Length: 154
Image (cartoon, rainbow, N blue to C red; front, side):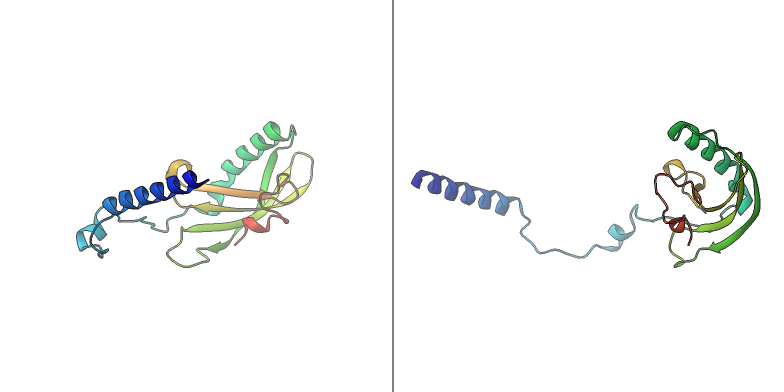
C-alpha cells in the first residue's frame, strides 16, 4: 500500500512538471485586430428565400419517398390548396432566414390534411441551396414535429 502511495505521488509530481513546462509562461492576451478578422467572416445571409410555392415539388417528392420507403404506404400527395406564408424571419434578424408556410394537401386516400413547412436559406445539403422542412398533420409517424406538427411552425 505504501509503495502505491509513493508511486501516485511521483506520478502527480511528474504530471505537474509536464503541464508546467507545456503551459505558457505569460498570461492570456486579447486577440489583435488581424486575429479577429482573419478567416472569421461568418455567414452572409441575404434574406433571399424562395416563395412558398417553390417548395411544393420538393415536399411532394419527399413525402412519397418517406411513405413508401419507411412506412410501406402507398400514400402520395395529389394536390395543394390554400398555400400561404405564415411568417418570414420571425426571430432576430441575425438568425438564419426562413419563410414559414402552411396549406392543405389532398392525399391519394381522399383525405385533406394540413401541411406546415419552412424554406431555409442555405439549408440544403452541406449548406448549398435552400432547404425545406415539412410536416403533414396526422402523418408525422416518427413524431419529429409532434404534437400536431407544432414544431414545424414558427
